[in-house]
Length: 97
Image (cartoon, rainbow, N blue to C red; front, side, top):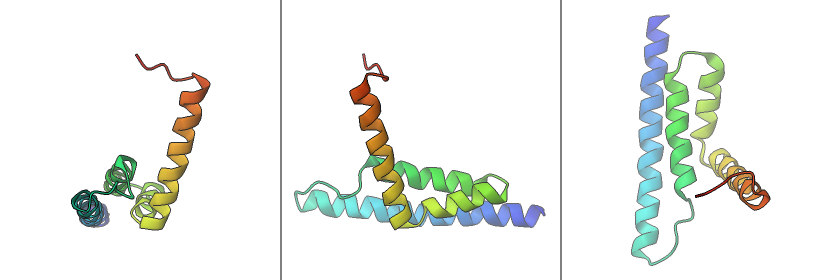
């Protein structure tokens, strides 16, 4: 059982690191080309969240963690979060000082 937990945590670390480095590489390429990155900060935060979920014990957290490390799923989740944030900001539910 402990081996499975440690294996899952190691897999989460390696996958999150690989995906995170890929996101940073694409940000750097876009910056060098003078363009806005296709993926924003939200994408990078979701990679970190995916890695953290994989490090937590449990099948459900591992499943969600793996899903967040799949680029198309992560982009869709990021787009949904951005839409939700826009809704919160425009409705006035979030007060920014």
